[in-house]
Length: 383
Image (cartoon, rainbow, N blue to C red):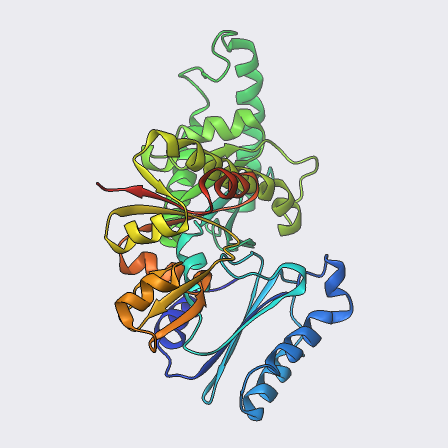
């Protein structure tokens, strides 16, 4: 998992590194047929041949490619005279087109914006597993799940056993007293040991959430227990709970089992959010289409920019920074000698940042609807 130290280095050292710097993004997902037998390594090496890159930098990259790492979906490499960094990611990166084995390579200005955007926009999700023999807390970030081993180190095995025994008594009594019309309401009087212990555990969980800057929370375990414990959390923490995911078929706290349980929940939440974004467009004051949206953006009128995950559009730009799909319009502003044809995906993140617009990328059905109905780009207008 990318650490906070890694993130700081990316933002402070790589993003502002002197030019030229080599930036490489590639799909390395081993589940895809085109990546069998490390075919992605060959594609990266072949892609570098198209650029006038010093041989010693290429050599550094090739050596880094041969380092064995856990399986990833995307690899990002940054190299220069005094730098070589590799990041193995379990996510796809927006506006980096890696379909069908493509490799995204740039030599010159650091192309780190897609990675920084992903880091800033992916919300850290906490996963609390209420296992009988001891609770576990995990951090889910950028598609990776990591257990925070010291989360409950101050709780002894004897205390976990006592909690488990008391829980059995509590829920046996609850089944007798629960009101059929309000199945999630529990009696006011429950075992005093459980109350004290749950308050202690709630305090520990809230400390973890604050220190790790967790923005979403999933509770795994028997529904009656997770929902009961949630009542002891503060209002602010309860507000970030996105799922009571239910119990596991077996009491297994391995990260692979927990990942299989929670990843579909997070994926669905993100796709549902993107679908809502598209559905809400008609209720807003908006502009659509590539040219109209770019013009409104550069006039400072857009507060939210909705962009397809795969943005395959060419635009014209000139020295004063103006962007347009019209070559004639750019020539009028800059003259014939100062214009160039570029990929919109290479500048869209920085462009939105420069004009104070929040970027929202959409995938799947939402992306298809954005392209077909709204001609590939939508801006929600301030005025």
